[in-house]
Length: 327
Length: 286
Image (tube, each protein chain N blue to C red):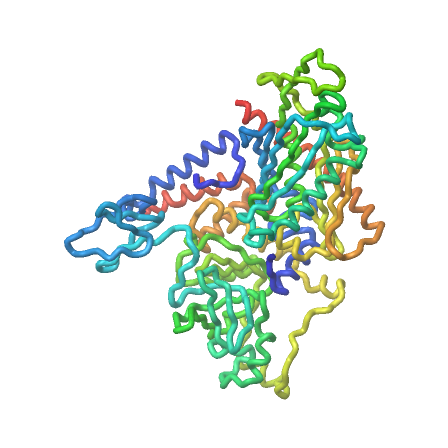
């Protein structure tokens, strides 16, 4: 029960234990020797020669794991992919990051990797949608596009000589504004075909970043490029990002509608429950938890309580076992 | 320090205005509070309180000492709070000192009362063994293990739980010592006196964001605050201390309104806390 931070009553404890045991029994036995904990010896064929990689060490002629994780083998190399660690980027991953610094021709982003990632000004579509060379003026106007602390969605482009680079070459990438950012352990998010989700019936956007950052927010229509810009193209000038100095009344008008906000909070709490239980986070599972809470007529805040947690664990066990039977 | 983009800040403020915060709470709802008692065997009383990811430990250690010359009929109580660097990287080295001293001052103000110590949350005159000669010194230490907002409320709850967990050994004074000598004492290993915690207040922190105020703010919400008022209220509904943080000024009428809201909230908190402490004690005893 990996230190679940919950106060459970005796019956709830038993129910949770049972659900978790069921989940464990469902996981495939084929791969069970691939997962290791610290000090487990990893079987290797010494005649072929072994290259010890990350998370392994040599102990009395045996290769021993120094991390909890899954053993990976590439030719001679043996290494352990750890479970709880920072995010490890792969080319093409969709990630969510927060701007740390606006630097020369680039933004520096925190994406929960051991280094900061770079998003070059030239690696993104301009908000006006025109394809052109980036001028010095564009560089001066970088703060109008993204500022420090802004939350941005982008794609991993790859490693260049100076670090990890991202790109945002489509209108679906870019700044995320109204909503909340959640952080979950990155191993709970698997790479999928689709990471951008629009839940139409609720009017919310859900972006599941591969780095464990999850955005839940009000739905924004992806702007169609090339349309608006011709009209309001003004003379080039250095723009100053407008710090909002609107009055309270004006601000209140712009707040998210209460109905939408309820759905946003509900979806966010569904993600929180899943991450506290350590279940894989995908759209279907989030939706399942979301609808479970709606159908059991639960207050949004009560979703974080122990009773609902146990309920989710039981449902998940049920779902996985029925999936298994189908196959 | 948490950094938030303008959009997120706006979202949080909007949520508070609409009475639906980011985790689905209302403005005056607390996160679930978990209490464990008796977690440090060496201490006379200890407790751990968790609110969300905030995790604090309080311990009470009693030692025999000499009362101060000015107040021969009172024991001594020292409160010290430490912020562990595991809670936040910024607390490393001396980084946490500013916050620690702020928290300990606020708690001292709320629990110990004025110089004379009359009517304070912790009754110091009950700590005297022989007037002017021997008294108990209570060392109350708090440790912030993990910080997720609302530290002061969590610490006050932990101290309350630790004090109700505290057993002070009963002391027999060997008779026959003359008045100017230090009398000899015999500390019992078996008999303990339960500490009376009925007067110990709870602290309710109201954080003002925009035009509204909320209880139990998360760090994200705390980063948006104009000012925060911590009000400590005892079981009778009397106010034992008020501390204000944050630079923004408050209208006196707002303060009065906050006080009455805090009184209302404190009743629920007190009841919740008492039942949590009772169940924790039951679990600890078994």
